[in-house]
Length: 271
Image (cartoon, rainbow, N blue to C red; front, side):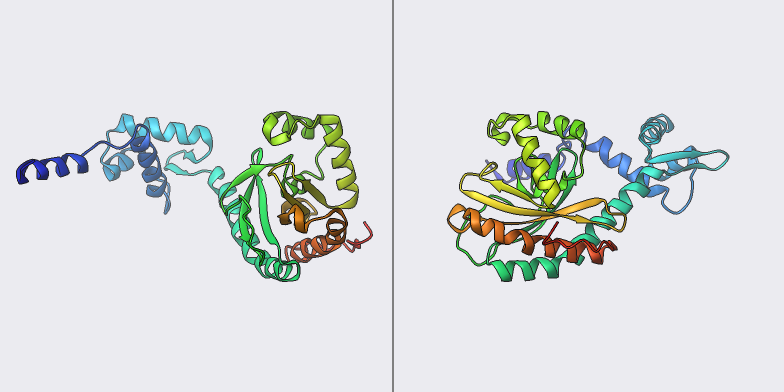
């Protein structure tokens, strides 16, 4: 390939169209950003975004339908309530990670094990933070990962207040590999025990040779908004040690909960 051909190839690569759907997504985001300061009529949006009116109307209508925009009579399109909902959720997650971090560090120092912080994300547990601990072991989790609810210690703690019907739905959503072939009745009985005690276990259900002790984190209303867990290989997580860790993990979860505004005086060791 000569220089002119190489140059042409590079030019073609730069001008290659974006993946299908990307352009529509970016235009939708541009539209949201265009109305941040004030409600804006359709014509003004068309001129600002350099798109024809029919395209802007189609994008805006879809965003209105999903709650990301609203149409204000006599003024135009404005930001919708869905963005407010997402903003509060994002703020809660960001604040949660910051508030929890010192307690996670202390818990990791005390136990020497890996410590996780996670929240409910649809039908999965989203991991917001992880401290690897001092032991030279490999646990298959990373910040940003989404893990099963019904087979992880952290995931189970997120579900401790759920009703029988809600648990059944979530259990059925997980594949057989995640559930380790556990049937619902047996799993629910374990969940009743965990709920009564305010903690949860993962007994190698999610990952071979990995055991966890989890506990829920509550906000000012008492609602479970997150969970933490201490995880290690079975070699360091014998049954008696897991029992000993229940109080320690619950105390850390309680400390985080208090910083989030929970004022319950329940003794975490005796619950």
